[in-house]
Image: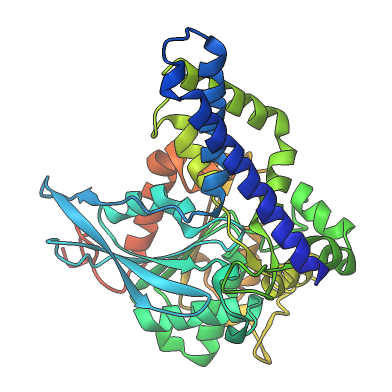
Length: 421
């Protein structure tokens, strides 16, 4: 029960700060002060506006915000988000482009369940939608999932991926980003043994901890230092009475966000101070760089406790994927059984979360895969975020990934010539 009290206390603190911001904005913006040229009131209103928005966005799932896409015909086409498979802990969604012929190149983008929503991959989705049919794993906030839905750990996550791949068929190209990379590799190996005809055409693994010990970082060091007992005692809480998932054990998004912020507190503090100044001077807008970044960065979701703890224990501490000893539903997954799925790894030279070496380890584990079906790329000067979003992704990495898909497609992609041609 004390964990539930702690969860409600964090929510109360968040709600109080949001209220303080709204109150300051309302008070300083009162018409009765309009005739008083006092700059302190402008700064108070600016502080209130930034504070209210900051704490309000923490509990709101961002919208995908992808309403249209410009296709090869030069026209803007409306985009609809359709749910293909609906599950308690996550859905498989499809970005349907109205009025466009279905694209032969179909992509499943596996989003991480690491504290942020799948919308973190918004720019990745938009870039792929230009000439691909894009499907995304849209994970749910654990606080909104009733306890009656049961548990959800790394094995359940892997089984979800297996089911999603089966649903989409073997002409799908899978792209996994960050945290789900090792589990996506395991899901592919599981299919290779249990249902070979459902294996994807290709697998692109971007910046994930297949072997965390290959190149240690602060993230892997933390996993080594903290015992599972300490982690469960300090990080896990029960969802409070306000949400549908009341009583469910979770790793709260607000707790993870505070950890993220504390790692770069000086940088974040300066960013918010500068934003208050811009608002006071009338230079800010809803879609300025600060708001675009923090609207997504501050929107956090709770993770099921079983998933968080099993990730730390089985992926980082025990290195079950790196040792080819991962078990799903009592079945030991053998990565060497992958023989017909082309695999490409992508790493960032300046990635301080999944450093170079952690992801490429997947290629050595797939001993049954011919070298001609293996590829790797290390992007110079790119950090963790840059390898799946931003300039490095758009200009350098995305074209390589598209070429890799075309070279290993079971159907002919647009503008791709066959051998006969």
